[in-house]
Length: 266
Length: 373
Image 1 (cartoon, rainbow over the protein chains, first blue to last red):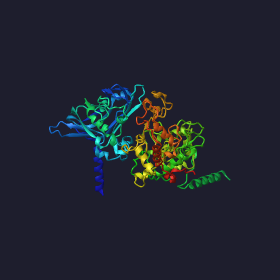
Image 2: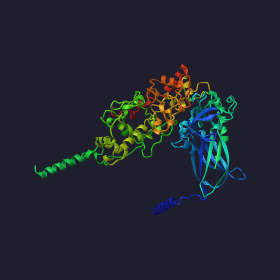
Image 3: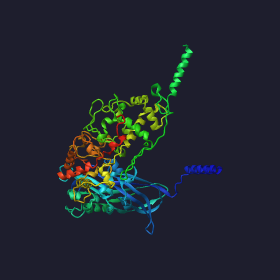
Image 4: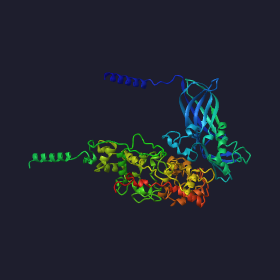
């Protein structure tokens, strides 16, 4: 019996010691990534009017999931990656100018220091997680969101781009557009090359800009009637895509376009 | 009788009176409701929701777990007009169980006969909503929400100190509060605990017995009209049927995205300031939110007429006509709103599916009914 008391005392002392000596790895630092939406280089602000090749355009929503966010190690073999985050939801639907300029900050504590050649991330929900449903997640989890799950495809909605254009120039934005990307076939990894040096002396921060204008380039077949290499947002068949089989091509193009739309800035 | 004898007799009567208080009886609350409750057992037992697999988990605040006695206390408070100034109206006065916990009116009326500006909302499955309650989202959670109607001058129009006093002096409530929350003294009965109990009761109001749920659990099949309505509602026909765009705001399984939208009810042109009821924007102060209202759950929608935040539509047919029209253009009109030009057949099919969302099985659950009847 007395050994039990010793054991208990030993455990208590052990726990107490853990409280006092929280170990922070010596070779880590804090990293902040700030996602910012832009439109042709300007901060992206909801309901602000921008120019879409001569047509006034406004946005109401721009958001997307990022997944398997990693740093690419400066490794001669070219194979090393340091995973930072499995999944998160980035909502850049800011209506206030200050918020739009500030962006969405993702704090990543205790990241291993070293030299990295860039960032890698998927836009959307990777296939292994996309087998699940929003109802599988507890409150507060990024995937616990009925707004970003589409029962019809059994898929999360990876990204939403919504807004309207004033097609006839009468001041009313009557022609809306909605692009809801989902299903495994539109999930892509994107590598963003950048010289990233992390050392213990200071926290590091980088901006990741996403230019929405670039998402509309290289439109699907039949959606570039104007010949301007931009999606015909004044055409119903081109301006609404919910990733059903018949609408998939435009969403596929848009999700590939993230590769050109993403830029890392120090 | 001498004075000593008189004192003895008085003491005896007092002792006898005290000893007659059994463990299950409510001690007389002396001094305006201040009294010990320690002799009353406090044995909290978890109240289980027993949700089906296709439902999400409900977030339960760690400081207000559902217990059998907590839910029962909340039920009593919900149906008891003690929460109103003149004892004429309870929470249930605007939330009738047989109307999916709405009141069947375009806008609700309080104890003074003054009509409010908005329609009573269904409380079925309200425990799943986390993005702000009421049509305008001004309450972050049920505990906060439950406090407001009591003091609202066009609802129950009283004060919490008055309600607290009535609850402390009540012959039964101190016992119920003790059993629900383990308080030691009637003086510990507060509006916070009352709101917690009501919130527990509201979280217990789960509904998942509709035909939709039966089909989801492979226990039933839709009729042809219901099936086509389902396919249009969720846009899963790959172009065979029209996309009715419903699920953008009313996704499964709760049939709401727990979010706020401008669905084009009011013509404000390009000026969002013109919304007579600014809805979510009135709470957030953000212009982009003007005229946005909570997308209610469509579960039991056939039981909860009239429709919209101001009850402007009396029937589901009128609702479908509105969505078929696309609504009024505005800068923040939800981009998924567009003229659908639904045919009569398509409306009939959508209507059939909406009726498949009706669940009357909760009628048989005594927990959902008035305990005073």
